[in-house]
Image (cartoon, rainbow, N blue to C red; front, side, top):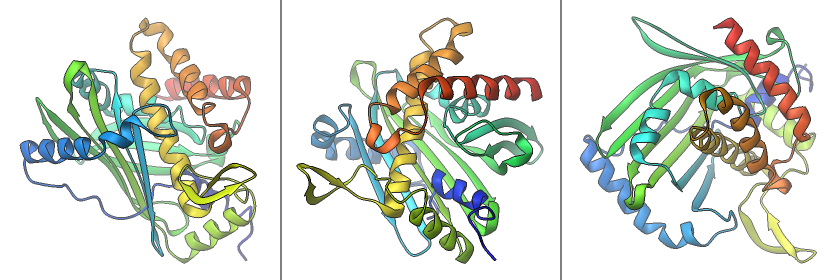
Length: 299
């Protein structure tokens, strides 16, 4: 019999929301991909300037019977070369991912079959690794040239029947030293995953909301979507804020960057308390310091 306790691993995966459609490369050359992404930048010009996020960002989510998709387009105030060097590295991705409240551990490793990221998922409080769930992501550099790069992380299997995880990130340079970034992630779930998601939404996720607004107003405030799209939108934003925090912390001395990343990620999340508040600052900082120390010790 499936219970809240037995479904905990899949609930954690659902809360991460890596949603499911296979990510297709939009074209076969960096030049064409850069052109496509630039056209998207032009198309989203108004949304990037005028939105609820108070930053140049556009968020989109989609759902189907067994798939979820979340994506963000954003302008970051860092050069393309800096973004490329920072994100086109498996080890750096572990420093990005560990910022997320549900990521307990990440290790990059390589062999003749390629580069892997071993990622442990857990609860929003301190846990031993044996009580967490592991997902193994294959890291691939898809394209990389002077004005476009793309990488993909994929995992064929996850806990309790989840599968086909895909994380895709691509970017192009803009004028004035800025970069246009596109981040997408997806995953598939079967019957047990669907049951787990419904259980999550009926219990601990019942009152949580996303960022997309409906046409309604509630007590004079915007009415935000709930359900599975709310889940994927919250976590899409959490991962984008992790990327943003990692990039921003590169401006401080190396021995101060880890602490700075934790501070920036938490503060950015608290800019959207209705959607993203989970724990108090000191609880988050204490937990992440321990997790990062554990991650470095095991490497």
